[in-house]
Image 1 (tube, rainbow, N blue to C red):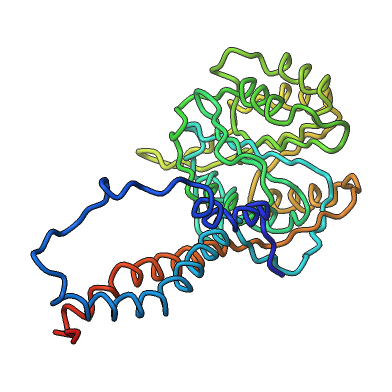
Image 2 (image 1 turned 180 degrees about the vertical axis):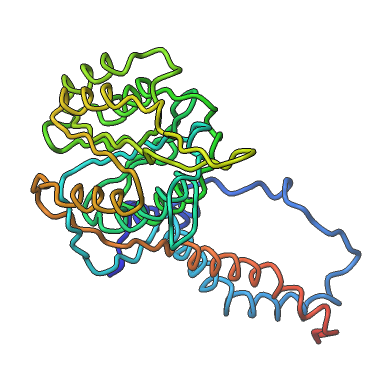
Length: 333
């Protein structure tokens, strides 16, 4: 259906007539004139042009005015109403982009990859299943950055996560500041409507806010935090004479991550490989949403360029048509 945003614009329809009726006419002395010795050679021309003017100029000017009013009223085409399932949950992903995320201790399709690549591969499917949730993305290193504000556009969230690069936000890890930014962005909701999934492979080494203090603020704001510790526990490193077995996750502060989750009513998960990470996402997928009324969406298409373009065309005809007889060599008798 067609809807006018400003239908009051049509009350201006009689404005040209009112100006013509009540506005004082211009003085003859102020009008432009062509002085010639005799008007007899132009008598036929004036007669013919006057007759042609009365035939088409007034209807065309009226049509132009109506089109301008139609464009001013801002017509819109409203599409069919579409009901959107809304769970009522605001969910933020906070992803660590510090330098340690480039450690290659995850297998993906039989190939050794870094932690961030494995995270992207598993998180993409999780994001696409979040129908009805508003999703957001925080990337953090030395400082946290809101990469995607809360939105229903899951494709954009997945794309911007896929474009994230290690070291983009710095080489250190500001876990406390990332939680603080999430609290700020989710401020206003209550209970299980707010969820933060924090993924990191290290300990808090940067930022102004301590992680446990940030967790206290999150709990007071009703933000539930699920923390995920990334990284394998054993990894073979090739030495000069023989291979060594090391723990690439020695810097992972599991104690703090567990305390953050417990303090906010969430859980701590340990992802040592890609399969465990996928299982964690599957478990997070079963979070009970807070039910709300469904939201109705209608697509809106602006139509004002059409009457505006037609008005421009009509006004061009008003200017050009009176000149056509002269250009084609027409002469009155």
